[in-house]
Length: 351
Ligand SMILES: *Cc1c(COP(=O)(O)O)cnc(C)c1O
Picture (cartoon, rainbow, N blue to C red):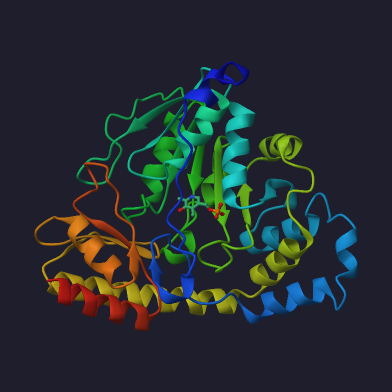
């Protein structure tokens, strides 16, 4: 059978997403950076309105270009709609960026640790992967003066660690990349700033955003990318032509228009994050300052597995990475204040 497959597909491992338990309701789920709050009520209204009483609209295809969404997103971010493409989750557009730019054997680069799905997507395409580590002062170690990989992915704020890269540093990276610099800003709504303005200043910069985390819409699969019209037009050619279904499109317009709800939700999460970080530090944990909706924290004995298992036994799911540079700690998503109080009590019990 193996001979029927492309060698890179036969030999690669698939991506392993965070654990999704069947009995979701009985867990406190802090392992995949989902939002513990519901989406805006206006999103639910818009989905129900699109569905109608008899689902009558579902027999026709959705808008192929997601034009309305591009207009709403364009207004929100200050770009012409020709600079924006909508995606079935930002994962789709990360994939299509690789398909658009990297041929078999070409290199793509990213920071380790960050989002390892870039590597899976590159391998599907047959591209080579090069990772760069981080220095103690949170810069990329040994980044070449001229990086010639077809794409460099920079997750900012970084997941799983939490800090965002400073704008002037990202701008310097843009000038050092001969290929695309893709800024994965999945967590930017929780952060103090964004590097979006670099899209205007540098023709090789693309920013990706997701509605999964800050807009609490992981279940709808919505993301987008912002870049030069030439790049967006290329991405438009290779996406599935009906990549966003009708309900997702209705949800997206309503979500992007309800900025008050987004702001309130992100503020609550940020406040809880800072409170939770302080409480963990008071218990001797090392906590990296975070701009996302998660914290990377290590217990005093640097035994991440022990805490992971103690929490698991109490039906609290967090993320532990077996990678040697991460195994001393845990990535803990920030849920509601109540969920984090329960988690803190459990941590105190585990000791
Ligand atoms: C969650 C996540 C994504 C995927 O977002 P979707 O829009 O749900 O596909 C991409 N990048 C990073 C860094 C993420 O954490």
